[in-house]
Length: 522
Image (tube, rainbow, N blue to C red; front, side, top):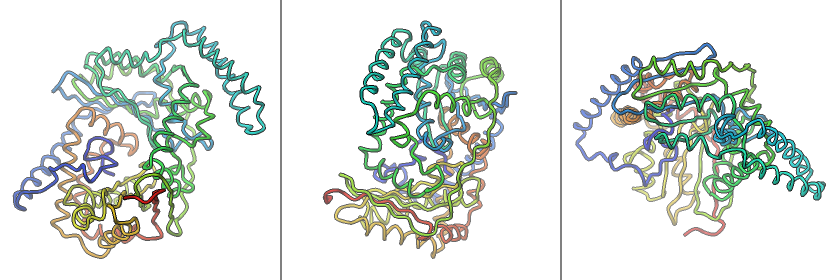
């Protein structure tokens, strides 16, 4: 898979209208070939140097640490990547991983606390009251409305009493006052990541904060935060045409495997998540032996390792439990979904495929770049510019994750007055070209060099490198996936593209979701 979420060049949702003008090759073929050859040489050297630059350690409790010293600014980027995401949630508890990510910003027993022993008593009462309220609410029409009212009033009073016992947003304040940038967290199907960039002399502050919220977080403002994530779902899925279409597409593409479940969760499950659910998930998955830390910046690796051992080294390893994941059964025919929404028409088309480290996954990286990376790419040139059939078109290899077999996806919106049916036919015709016509060698060479050049760009910042190192060490099991990626890309032949296209771009392997406007688009 091409490196995720690191720059415009690796965006999972690249808009054809926003592609950089730098992708327009205005030079002669000879000059372009020379420049790209030079980039390839630079990429190969840099990849080799990267492997020598990364210091890799594993603590006794299983925590993996990757450190790169880059001394061009007095800052450091820090990524913590836990190998847990929505795919690991138990049935009926969807949304747990994302909700936990939110709650780990609420402070710890020492960070944000005024009187934790007194606070804990009220928190226990809040947990019991909320659980009783949820149990009664689950009864639906048979619920005792007077009991619901009584429990709701009791919960509101407890929350008010609790509010004076802690400082809200203390983690955010500590980071901000100490020069933090890019403070963020994200939850995906495969991993949960916490990231921040700081002045290099604030490394120990980071270690204290992150080790504490790994061991002793406090789930403050739980009930109100549960409302926040419900509102987040309403805004990003229920009220958003792209979010709604994508959710239905994934549910159709994966009818058994948990990749078919939304990261935010299904509404019913989200409504009844409780503190015990999050505590169990934390203790099971946010453990040192399930975690990778990447540190990139103006640091001394021995000093970094000493600090990490001081704060993280005594955290006990978790008990590893076998977590069976339902395999997706063989697809026996095309899966098609249509939804109506007050928005312009659009579609998502996907084909099931193997994930990394399969060689075919690398071939799909080439196909992705060939189809929609830049104005000279096939789908953009043909559907957007020449035929004016599409308003936007882009592709993504590896949706929605990489720990299990995934999808090659195509996103497109027709340009008025063209229809979704016309657009679908045009997309399928372009895929048929890949199945029947060998790719021109010059086009293949250009695509490979584009991938290599993008790799160089992806390593420009400390944060980008820390993100890649932590992600691939977690998902691929070895950060050196990024070191060897270009070498494998270079081995791909025209026959490989023909073979992969013929094997996977079939009707029986296709899922398509269409958004139909509630009123005709103009």
